[in-house]
Length: 535
Ligand SMILES: [Zn+2]
Image 1 (spheres, rainbow, N blue to C red):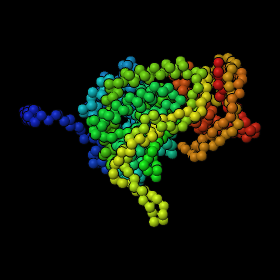
Image 2: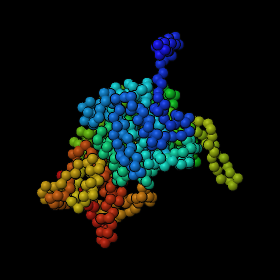
Image 3: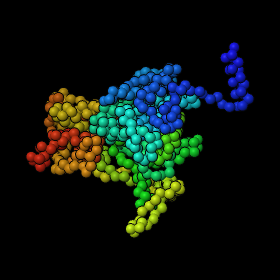
Image 4: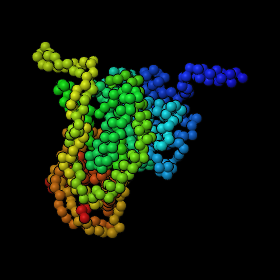
C-alpha cells in the first residue's frame, strides 16, 4: 500500500511540475571522478567495479578481454549492442557499423576513461539509449591499465594537480601510441588481434589530453593523416564528420572544439598552428592504412578535471550521435576504399616520406593571448594573459604532402630465413604465403649505400635510416620462401611497413639491423633483403 501511494504521489508531482523524469542510478554505477567531486580518477579496479555494476541489470553488454597485462590486470573490452551479441560474426551479419572508443592509452591522460564509463551508463540506463539503434559500440576505457595504476603526484605537470594523483604515460617504458608499426608492446599486439582484426571497427576514437599549448578550445581533434593510404576515409572524417560534430557540440553544450595543434608564443601573434605527425606508429594514423576512419581527441590540459571529463564525454556522445545517423555511409566509404586499394594500388607511386603542409583554408584561432615585455637584461619575453582572443587567418598545418615516393610492387618476396618478418606482418593481420616451388621474379633490389641513425631515441629505439638506389634484376626464390601479394585491402599498410625508405618502416624500427649492419660494415653496401616484384 505504502509503495503504491508513493508512486502515485511521484507521478502526480511529475505531471503538475512538468519536470522530465530523471533516471536515478545506483551508486555503484557512478565513477570515482563523480563520487570524489572530481578530485580523484579511477583506479583499474574501480573501472572494473563500475563495469560490473553496469553489466548487472542489462543483457546488452558483452565482455571480452583485451589482454592480461604484465602486472596481472585483465583489461576488459566492453561490447554494447541491441539486440545483444557475443561474436564478430553476429556483428557482421547485423550489417551495423562497429565504433571503437578507447581511453587512457597514455596512463596519465584519464579523461577518456571517466567519460567512457559515463557514456556507457548513459547508453544503457540514461538518456542515450537510442545510440544503440543502428550501431555496435566497443569500449576499452582503460587501455594502458598498468600505466593508469602507477599513480603519483605531478605525472601531469600541465594539469596543475587536477586531479592530484594520475598514472604515467608509458606502459613498462613503452609509449603505446608510438608502437603502431613495430608492435612490441603487449597492448598493441592485443589491440590488433582482439579488436582491429577480430571486430574490424569502422571508426577508432583515441582519447587523450594535451601537454601544454594555451589555445582556447575545450578539446582539439585530428583525423587520421592518410599519408600513403587511400584518402577517402580520412577526407570524410576531416571534411564532413568532424565539422558536423564540432557544430553540434557548440549548439548543444556551447563548447568550442577545434583543430589539434600548437604554436610558439615567442612568435606572437601566431601565424601557424602545427599538428603532430603523419606517421602510422600513431594508432589513429595507422587506421588510414587499413581503410578505416579514426579520430584523435585531446582535452585541454589546463582546464579543471570536471571540465575535461565533460568535454571528452560530450565529444564521445556527439560522435556516436553522428555515427548513429551516418554509420552506413561510413561503412560504405570504408569498404569502397578496401576494394579500391585491393584493385588499383599496384604500380602507383606512393609517398614514403612526408612534410607537414597547411590546409587550403586558414583558420581563426581561439587562444589565450601573450603580452611581450622587456626584461631588465634587455631581452624580450612574454607573459600569458588571461584574455581569450581570436587570431584570424592562421595557417592551419593539419595536412601532409609526400616529399619522396616509391613504386608500389605487385608483391614483396623474401627468404624463408626471415621468419621473424613474416610473423611481424601477420601480427598486423597481413596474409603471408610461402612459395610452393622455386620461382623467378622480375623486379628491383634496393642496394643500401648508407645506414644512418635517427637523432633521438623513442621506445628504446634509435631508428635506422636507409638510403641507396634500386637495381633492376630477375631473381630466383626457393620453395618455402615468403611472398606477400599486393592485390590486398591492406596494400598501403604493407607498402609502408616494407619499403626500405619509408619513414616508419620495419627497417626504420631496426628490424633488419642485425642482418644489415655486419654485412654493410664488411662491404660498404648491402642488398635490402625484401625484393620488389614489378610485373
Ligand atoms: Zn596522449
